[in-house]
Amino acid sequence: MLPIRRYAADVKPLAIIMAAASCAAALPALAQTGLGASVELATDERRRGISWSDGELSPAASVNVGVPFGLDLDARVTATRGDPRHGGADAVFDLTGGFTRDIGSGLRVNGFATGHLFAGAAEALDYAELGLGASFALGPGEVGLDARYAPDQRAIGGDNLWVGARARVGVPATPFTFNASLGRSTGSVDDPRRAARLRPGGDYTDWSLGVDHITGPVSVGLLYTGTDIGAVTPSPFANARDTGDRVTARLAISF
Image 1: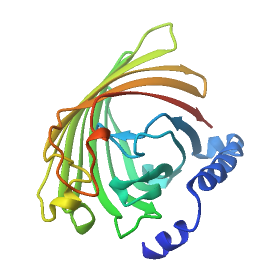
Image 2: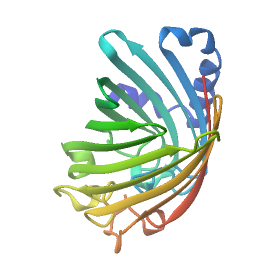
Image 3: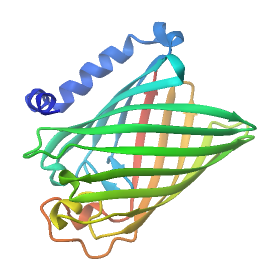
């Protein structure tokens, strides 16, 4: 992973994202082979209720490849805008490998492993996590349960477990889809300074409510996120202003 960081640190994140977007624009003709992509622009990149872009505008691009045996490979780059949470990194590369299985009667399960690589971080802050999920679809609606676990790693000052529930429903005969989620982050602490990256005030609960307007490959959405984080642990990797309630907007185009 170190060679990746040394290379990525020399490249501006917006240039990376524009290059990924250019590649994505050439993908429609290959869509039938299981290759897809998207480009996005969000007013703030928020994950589990906290900002990963220091509250700033965040472009992103991703590519997904379906491979034999039902496996999926996904690469995503997102601008983090020098967020102190990730050591001043300019961007994060999320590299994911996983699988999805339809069990039948609307039940689907999935599992994956993700490596988070931070370009331009002041120190070694890359980390990895594992995930499992299950969802049940009924008509225009779907409910699901998810878990993500990052084993004990120096970059996050311990281990981290997030479990959550989600629901979404599409309004028949309209382009609108509503969604909601509720999650809980817990874990052990070896280094309080680094543990504050993912849990700024210790164990906490996050929630979200959103609506998306989907027309063909274009999706426009609004999302409200919040947490019950109180006092923030003194740490260069955490700040109180990025943990509160916020409404964000997102535009995405899929290929």
